[in-house]
Image 1 (spheres, rainbow, N blue to C red):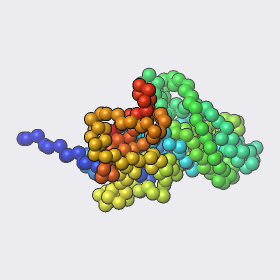
Image 2: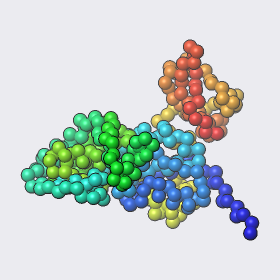
Image 3: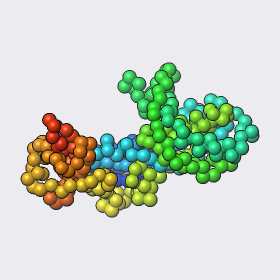
Image 4: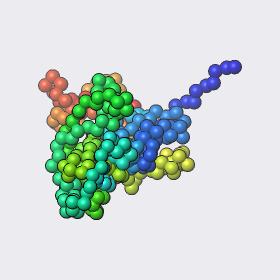
Length: 305
C-alpha cells in the first residue's frame, strides 16, 4: 500500500478573534480550529484557563510571528467570586482545602477589598499554572504531589470595579497587565478577609484593542469555518492597530528583504516602532529604530513576507 499524502498546509495569515467557551483549554480550541481549517499553522497570544471564557487571539500562518507584540497588551476581565472556600487551584473547579463562615463580612467590606486590587503590585503565581520551574510547568509538579516552589511576579491592576456585591458572592471587572492571574487576586482577597475565596467565573472582555463584541463564537466557527474565516480573519497589516504604518518603495522593499537596514535619520529617535508595508499595502515587516554605529536605523524585528 502506498504512503498517504499529507494534507497541504493552508496559506492563511492573520488574526482570528475567538470567543472561547468555558470548559476546553486554549490548546483544545486551537486544535479544533486547526482541524476545521485543514492543517494550518496556528498559535495564540494569551492563554485562558479552562474555566475562563472570552477573547482568545488565534494567530494563523505568519500571524504567529507577531505573538510577542500582542501578548503584552493589558487585559480586561469580568468575573465572579465566592467567599468561604479555599481550593488548590484558587477557583471553583479545584479541590476544597478549607471552608469558613462569612456571616461577619459586610457588602461594604467585600466591595472595598475588590477595589483594593488596584494597590497590588506583586502576586504569587498559583501552583496550578503553566509557569515553569526548571523547564517544567508548575501544574505538573502539583499533580505529582511534589513541592511547588513559590514564585511571584510584578503586576499592574487598574480600574477595579465591584459590579454587584451580595456576600458571600460578588461580581467584578478589572483591567490588568499581561500575565496577571485573576484567580490569585481572588485567593489573596480571601486570605486578607480571613475566610478564603474562590473564583467562580471569568470572561476576558478585551485583549488590548481586540474586544469580545468582535469575537467569533467557537461553536459558530466550527459549524461554518470557511464562511466565518473569510468574514472574520484580520490580515497581518491590521494585527497591530496601534503601530504606525509606512509604505515602502519597491527599492526599499528589496533592501528589507535582503536584510538591509533603512535610515531613520530625521524620522524618529531610537525605540520607535512601525510596521512596513510593500507598495501593494501588504505587511512586509515589523521594525524598530535603533542606534547603529552612531546613526538611527530601522532594524527589522520580524519579516512577514
